[in-house]
Image (spheres, helix red, strand yellow):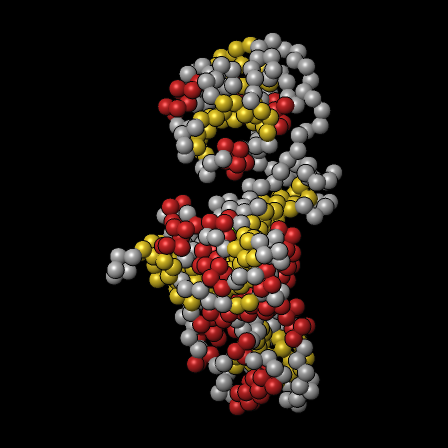
Length: 577
Ligand code: ATP
Ligand code: MG
């Protein structure tokens, strides 16, 4: 591929709405272009990266025995009515009507469609198991589409669905996908963790998320420093601390804490640490049920754990009016004593005694409080968010914390969709059995973006080689010099001959005669051999396009090449040509 014939609309300025580095660099490198919020053009350079991710995904899916299909993007509402999701799925589902006023949606995921295929075609256990996948455009009307390809509204996903006669079979199918995903992200050259995840609204019994580690990731994950345990903090379990609470030794006393509302301020005033205080969070769910949650003062509530406990989809801090009604005081002074709602406490609270908490009276807190003696809790349950330093739930190790970007997700679905949509087969006894399903997604565009979040520096993208749009770029500083031009063309041909197709080529080779700007020798190219490995390890990243530029000069003999670093001049070169 010749640059003069390529379409590479790079930008000097970062678009104003590009908050994260991958979005900034992809836009500046001319990889993507915004059409509307969360909707992008994939320009040639961007599409090359997308295709590279797709190819790796496709090869590994095929290798794992999955079979490619393509389902429609526009899906009739009937199918979604059958599964119940037409009502359940919120505004993220883009709904539309055709000319006959029939309802459709643009598929945000395809469980219904694939289940319909299978129930309409598969009758016997002999046809099982199998796994059908597609690589296709999805639409989710995200509330806040942002971060470029990381969280788009229209985005490309690989989604796969496995079908088995029983649970044991479904576990095997799941394991195959889990292993295939490990291979996919390893082959992409990314540092990642497979973490236990909450199975959320899609339903299902267990799931893992594949997280690309990056400081800018939206997800918080923890992993054990000793064993294999790793989980999304949404899911990470915590055990009861060892030992019972010491017996109460202090009387309950009321202390004036004027205008002090935060745990930190009250603790400082009482000359205590927040960890010796209890915070009482009055929470409300979508059914307007109110519950008070007690946590150690320095801990954070895990809202997902609370949702599971209350069997609801959403919880939030109750508003002021509710807090006043329940506690008789404004927010900031809540406590469990005399509360007129359910009171749940985190496991850690069980091991605490003689603590400080809110008095349910404006400007007052209590000290020397003890559960059992001064108030009762309905239950002690795991409700807090795991953090670095917490004990591992599986072994004697400690948890470490990371930020990650969810690029893939494997779910064991069970029979949620096959039950609702009556997808059954006959088993070897002729009995009707409901299919057991799994579903498995990879965000193709998000994987490309995550690669950039993980691999960049102040000069721009440092592509992991398997995803680099080009591996080598040959540039001539002075193409009017016949020697240089000849050397450039020769090198280009050699690269092609060596099977390094420039269309698949992140190294740039800049050809020029010796000059003052040319510095250290990086590679000697003798007798047609290109030592790309030694070349890739020693070169510096260039600008936002992710190319790495080297200068190459011809030696007297012209059979031997010296590749030298020439960052400042090569920058100019691309800008001019
Ligand atoms: P998130 O929690 O980030 O919104 P999700 O859990 O809803 O994602 P899944 O339903 O598990 O997403 O979809 C499978 C994969 O599709 C995700 O792991 C992610 O890589 C990708 N994906 C999901 N939503 C988006 C989006 N809005 N833009 C780009 N990729 C996405
Ligand atoms: Mg997910």
